[in-house]
Length: 142
Image 1 (cartoon, rainbow, N blue to C red):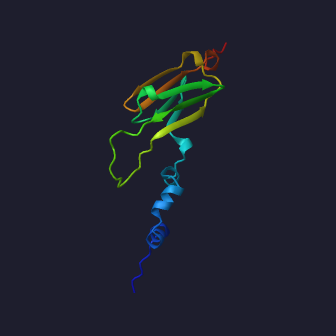
Image 2: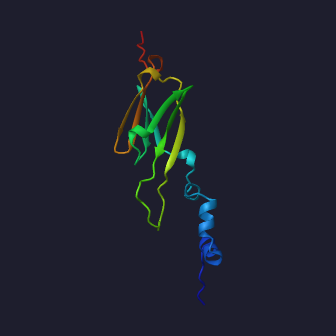
């Protein structure tokens, strides 16, 4: 005897034809395991002299990206606009468009006056130098 096992979401869609309703109720970002508050995706690394934040923002011109430092947080915000002239019927639609904002808590020892940012090929690199007090120092032993 052969038994076919089908996952519940596929069975649900076949029985109730509910994929369109499901798509409206639960945006793709929630189904894929990523929340809207997690975009753009970032890496934050701390080095001896600086903190480096690298963010992925493909398809967003640098003119549409805004950076703000306030009370020990860095906020990256902007908008990815829907391309014009795409009037066809979507067979798969996984790219998100619209406004985004991501706030990252920074270490207390960042020198906000010397922060720099560069953008190339959809990658935003924000360099946050450490204040002199926070840098490690060697102590000579007498």
